[in-house]
Length: 140
Image (cartoon, rainbow, N blue to C red):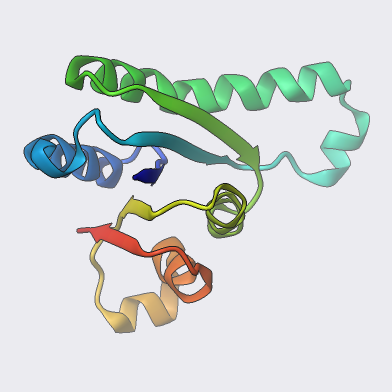
């Protein structure tokens, strides 16, 4: 099974990873994993004056801050994964990667707010679930 794990380095990502570890009989190393992270984009005016190599390095560094502990976790669990990052709004990046990769399952963490808070605050998970055609497992 091809599994896409959406991560942001938050406590909700850690909760999602703990769920995967606790259910290793379902989510063990026998599956093909891709880990995706949406890096916050540099504002367009700032990006316009930055050298492309500097901008690329910034995005790589920001993604690596999130990926480093996840790589260590997956290595400890005996799971091999591919790591992908894109600059942009998180929901758009996750949905685009899910559609592009033809995944069997998308796994992501959520803060677990009620529907009223989602209405007021918005939620990456809510947006992803509304737009994504890939079956999703939301860990709260």
